[in-house]
Image (cartoon, rainbow, N blue to C red; front, side, top):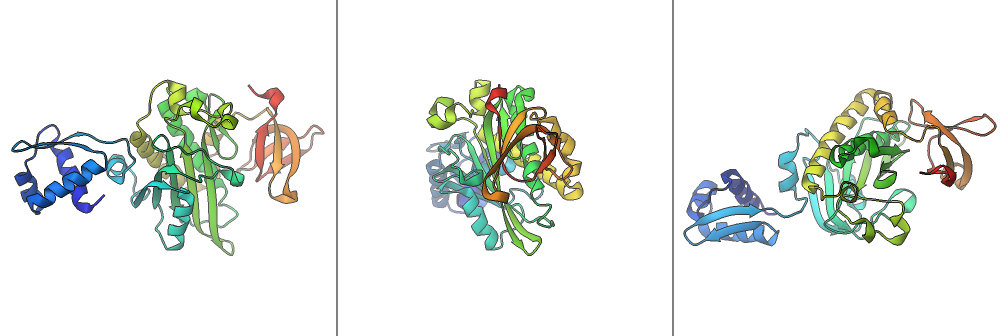
Length: 336
């Protein structure tokens, strides 16, 4: 959106139900009435319903269901997150865009949002179903003062913020849980995934790219068949559509608060909140090791989360394992 159109939008919002004449807008903004008309047409092209009659002035009748900066930022309480806001109608992957921006020097908190993705990615290279104008696909550039050994718990911190936001909108907070390390489940079904990628210099983090996808208003029956039995959306769960702008703003507020706490006290400061939504304890799981051994599978019972965010597993022979990276599934015979 052009700066002029954004100023017109702000003026119309400030007027509420009252109409503003082209002459009044021209005087207020210091531009010609012809420019006012062009800016209004820009708003209309972006999906805003701007009423206007000859001699009657302009009035903002409705805003589009779009995650424009002009919609999200006025609702934010953040200090640094999403203050630089990049909106895209569609892209291959918001993580790819954010990574490019990070390499170009984008500041801490730079946020990318796309209405749709053609190649959305989850962990381990999996595809993330990304239909347009229904969900939230966002990636954030972070520049924390962390060494590479402590960086992985950032994704656990992010899961807390996502889970708390989903719980606030679900109308059923107890139905929200975290599946270690990065999935948020609603009623036992995946509704959000988080992907983190790191740029480093020796043992210091240069930047992190935190990618978050949340299924908000997509109908469950529209999921690809292979996902349908495993995933849901917030709207499907609660039976009504979600205000995507409100959700995004709430998520960014929660995320900034959680990441600030993580920066101050590490994962240990957040572990009680993570464990409150960690429902895997006592359940039989299988772990596909994606780092050591290139795919070794182990099985056991999840017993908890360690101070550094590692998943604690007890094997049948009584031996204990700390899982710091891997793909975890809940054994089918214990699934709900």
